[in-house]
Image 1 (tube, helix red, strand yellow):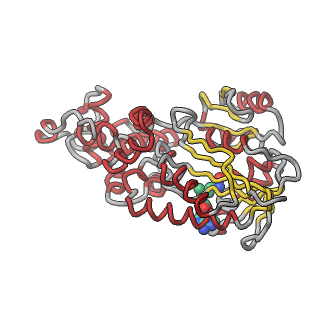
Image 2 (cartoon, helix red, strand yellow; image 1 turned 135 degrees about the horizontal axis):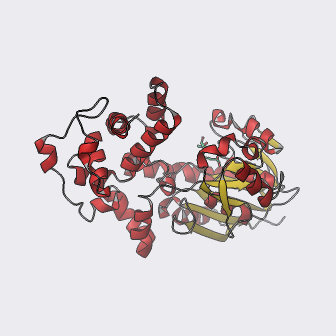
Image 3 (tube, helix red, strand yellow; image 1 turned 45 degrees about the horizontal axis):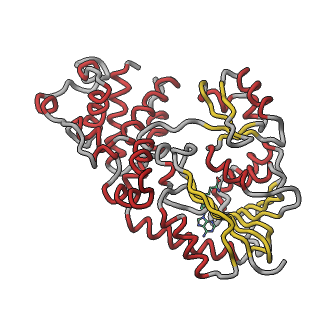
Length: 386
Ligand SMILES: C[S@@+](CC[C@H](N)C(=O)[O-])C[C@H]1O[C@@H](n2cnc3c(N)ncnc32)[C@H](O)[C@@H]1O
C-alpha cells in the first residue's frame, strides 16, 4: 500500500472509532477484510490510528475537524508534511483537500494541547500536582515494549542473547531484575524461541516492579483474586509463590493454562471463589486504565465520571472480599493501572477506615515519568495475631 492508501484506510477506521467502535476490534476487522495489506501495512495503519487517538484534541484543532480526515490532516500539519501527498487524486488515496479544509485548522488551545477531556485534565491536575503537564505530555507518546524475564527458565543475559538471535534488541533495566526494554525488533518478539519457550513474557515495567516489591518466596500461599490473563499470577509464581488464580469472569483466564505451561509455572485455577485463608491476597482490580492510555488511547475519550464512580465502588467491594481471605498476620496487595487518586490512595484510605484490623505497609504511584505505564500498588498487613 502507498502512504496515501494507508492514510485513507486509517481515516475510514478512525471515523468508525469516533462513532463508537472500540479501536482494537475495528483494526482487526479491517486487517481481516484487507487481504492485500501486508504486515508492514497493518502495522503502519495501526500506528496512524493510535497516534491520531492519542492526540485527538490537538490534531482536530490543527486539522479543523474531529473526523478521520481532520485528525490525519492535523497529524500531517503537526509533522510539517505536505498534505497534498496524502490527500490526492491517486488510486486508493483519500480525495484532495477542499478549499474549506485548506482554510480550516488552527493551533490548539492550552486545554486542547493536553489531549485529554477537560474533566479528566482537571482531575489529574489536582491528583498529580506539578507532575501533571509532563504526565499529560507523556500520554501523547507511544508506549515502549517491555519484557519480563522468567527467572525460573533462565537468566536475563540468556534471554537477551536468545532475543538477539531472533532480531530483537533489548536493554536490561537496573530498577527491576526481570525487566528488559525492547529497543528494536519488537514485532519479532512473539516469534522468538525465548517467547515461545517461556523465557520471556510481555509485561510492562510498572507491574513487574510492583510484583518484585512484594516479598514472596517458596511456600507463600497467594490468591490472585482478579487474575484475568494471569500477568500477576505468572510474575509471582516465577518468584516461587504458590499461586491460586480466580476471576469473577472465568473466561478471562482462558489463556492462563497455556501461558503457565509455557512458563513452567504451576498455577492453581480455582473453579469457585476460594475462601482461604492466604498469606497474600492480590487484588489487581478493574479500573479506569488511565495509566495505560498510551496503549489504549480510545479509552480516554470514552471514560465518564459515572464510569469512574462505578470503578471506585467495584474496587471497594473487591478489597473487602480480598481482606476476608487474608490469613491472620497475612498481607493484602492492591493494584491498579490508574493515575486517579480516587482509585488509588483514596481507595486505600477508605478501606483502612472500614477495616481497622489492617495497617498500611506502603503504597506507591508510578506514572509514565517513573516507569512506562501508570500504576499504583499498596501493601497492607493484617493486624490479627498469626
Ligand atoms: C486489571 S484486570 C486483571 C489483569 C490481570 N491481573 C493481569 O495481570 O493480567 C481486572 C480483572 O478483574 C476482574 N474482576 C472484575 N470484577 C471482579 C470481582 N468482583 N472479583 C474478582 N475479579 C473481578 C475482571 O474480570 C478482570 O479480569
